[in-house]
Amino acid sequence: MSQRGYTIIESLVVCALAGLFVGLAVPAAAEVRSGLAAGVAARELSVMLRAAQARAQAHGVRTRVEVGADGAVVALELHDDRWERWGAARLPARVETNYPEGVVDFVAAGWPTAAGQESPRAGSFTLIGPRPHSVVVQMAGCVRCL
Image 1 (tube, rainbow, N blue to C red):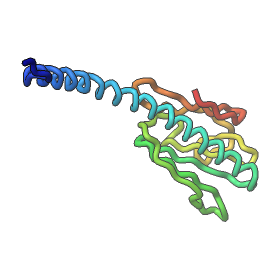
Image 2 (tube, rainbow, N blue to C red; image 1 turned 60 degrees about the horizontal axis):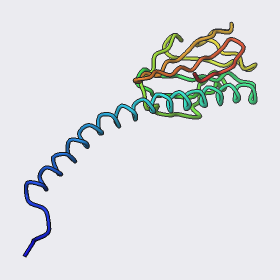
Image 3 (spheres, rainbow, N blue to C red; image 1 turned 180 degrees about the vertical axis):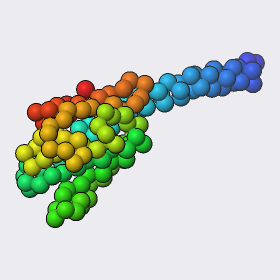
Image 4 (cartoon, rainbow, N blue to C red; image 1 turned 30 degrees about the horizontal axis):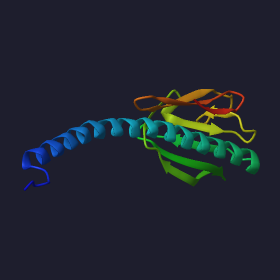
């Protein structure tokens, strides 16, 4: 009479192999996720900058986007010498920029400037991840996600 089934040793070997494969897959999945996060953050930031530029042109007022190194973004619009908040976001990545204090203003014509300045200023934001992504604000006002 023959018996069918698995021995305890065979079951333990299968469980050990499954654990090994899961252990290898989790760090790789985390790296992929953080790599995707920088790309998502770059797209979100470019949308926020384009929206601020469009509001400046549509409403004829200065708008501002403040981007913190931790990924906090606040969008403001100037009314009667007072900044009023109209939007905010939390980017899923750290941010580095060459704009002073991470602030870019858009004048009523839509040109990007440094905070409180009148002359156009190009700049960029780099979203940190395994594969960094950039958002470039050109002097002509074009916002590009790279």
